[in-house]
Each structure stands twice: as C-alpha cells, then as structure tokens.
Image (cartoon, rainbow, N blue to C red; front, top):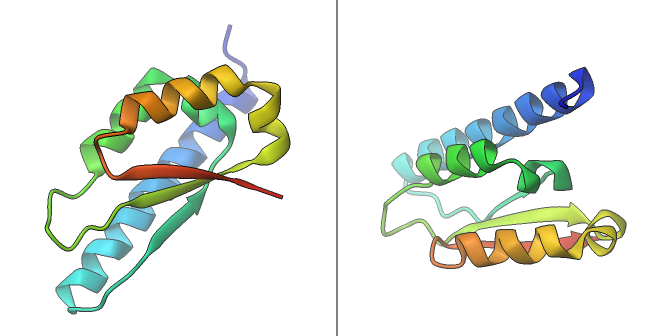
Length: 101
C-alpha cells in the first residue's frame, strides 16, 4: 500500500525530471551544451509509472548526450536488485546512474 510520503516523493521526483529536461531543452535552443545530472530517491526506480514518465520525457535529439541519475549509495546497496533492474530497463535510452556518497 502506498503512503502519502511515497506519493509526495514520487510527485517531487517526477517534477525534478520534468524541470531538468525542460531546462535542457531551453539550453539546447540557445545552442549551449549541457551535461544533465539529477538526484533521485531509489523509490523512483521502483515505480514503473515513474520510469515510463521518465522515458516519455527523454529528448529524441542528436544533442542529447544522456541523463545521469544519482542515487544515494546506501539506498542502492540495500536494494541492489532495484538498481540492476532499472539499469537494464533504460540501458538503450542514454540513461546512466551513479551512487552518491
């Protein structure tokens, strides 16, 4: 069962993804190169709807070099299977992720 905290975290993470990719579109329209990295909670990776939302927003543009998603290293090691599944799901879509801390 989903809690209010889960819902807020998911909504905030989706907002962060949307805002970062909107910023990328602005910078590319100004012909500025931008490496894009965002920090998300591992719970974002567990939610198929969030991952689909991320996929739909990824630019299909030659200037898009990819998206780096940073996840707390402690969270990642506690639930390595989620991180592996996410990496496998997005491997062809210019998305990588790194552990922070």
